[in-house]
Amino acid sequence: MQPAVVVVGSANADLVVHVDHRPDPGETILGSDVEVSPGGKGANQAVSVGKLGGTVAFVGCVGADDEGSLLRGSLEGAGVGLTGLAEVEEPTGTAFIMVTPDGENSIVVSPSANRRVTPEVVDRAGELLGRARVVVLQLEIPMATVAHVARRVAGARLLLNAAPAQPLAPEVLRRCDPLVVNRSEAESLLGAEADEVPDATHLAAGLLALGTRSVVVTLGADGAVVAERGSEPAHVPALEVEAVDTTGAGDAFVGALALQLAEGQELREAASFATKVAAVAVTRRGAQSSYPSRTELGPAGARPDTKASKLRSRE
Image (cartoon, rainbow, N blue to C red; front, top):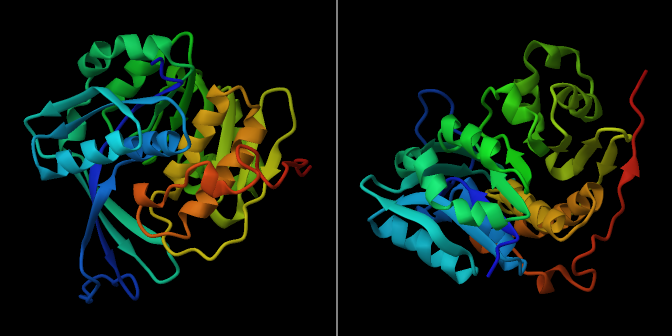
């Protein structure tokens, strides 16, 4: 079956511990028992698309270990096509995650097998990329691979989730439609200019000025700001929920956004739908296990409950 979305990216085993507070330098604290679950930005985003009923394929690498089997099973369970998943002679990537009582998390990633997501791995999955309507990338794989995908994707829309924050080449930025970042990632891309940026609307405008075709700046509980060339920025409000665990919520958002774009929705409508998906995800523990199906979104289904509201830039 032709995939509407192809995700090229990372696959990690998430090692999650819940803590009362983040330890200070030199401080040792006790936490909960460790929970092991499938994660990684790329795999998460692919699972988000699959759980929402989209046709999706994943291109990435895992090790020949229990963690790799865990990830393969989760991806298959969500209906993700795995012809582009390679097994390599390195351990599966690992993410070490601390979650505080307010649901916020701190994450350290050990890439391992994700370093083997090379241009050659991508080229072996070239037929998948050639058939996709949307191709999704993140920055937990080698930057050379990100640039390679950006160059070879011609007929598809390229969604780049620039996380974790790293410098991006102009030729990569020019292909992004959209570039998806949170506020800190946006500030990192803008560098010293960020000190003079008063709000997310200006951040989005600054990123457009770097050459990207469209931008989504995610703001957590405050929703997102969407900016496209030739139109005013739009604020997309978030739904009010009680957050339990924000791990992977941004990936739930990206997957939902990619699927909506592949289905022909405008960027603002797609972002509004994605905020609803992310809102459901943060009310549950874990990353992939927290992602909803379309049925779980309620009667609105593929449509969000809220509408984008116009924002005017401050003079």
